[in-house]
Length: 183
Image 1 (cartoon, rainbow, N blue to C red):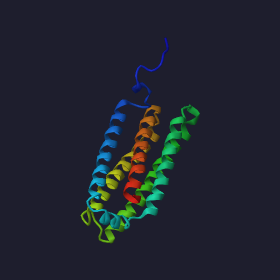
Image 2: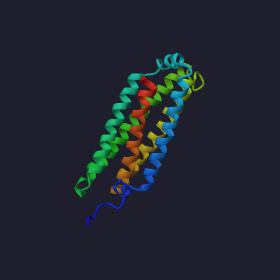
Image 3: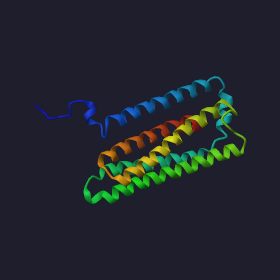
């Protein structure tokens, strides 16, 4: 008789409830993206024109920032030895700082749109743009705070939970970036 996991849930890192949260958030963003793509079908030219007003370079830089921060969060999860405690904390703080950089770039993009008179009701594209990227930015804020809290409290289980949440934030951006900025 083997002493393997009793169920697939036993193989997940972290607590079950963080995974319930992650799956529910991915579903919410998924519905938002499906609605975005559906409405886009009604006005492809208008959406393309509106999309051309976005800062693709900033969004590309933000993609690199989040992927790098996700790498640091993953590294933190691998540092389990007591002697690696400081390195684990620094990796989490580094991930949080990169997340803050993401927010600075995103905030600059929002401010530039506002200064140009582009707001959520300028065109249906911008309604979805501000809703989806703004909701994502709120998750980045939550993730940054969570990473910093875990770096401060430094519990191995909490590191896994915070990293899993942060990877969800990364994943959502990796889906939002091509759909909103490139397609």
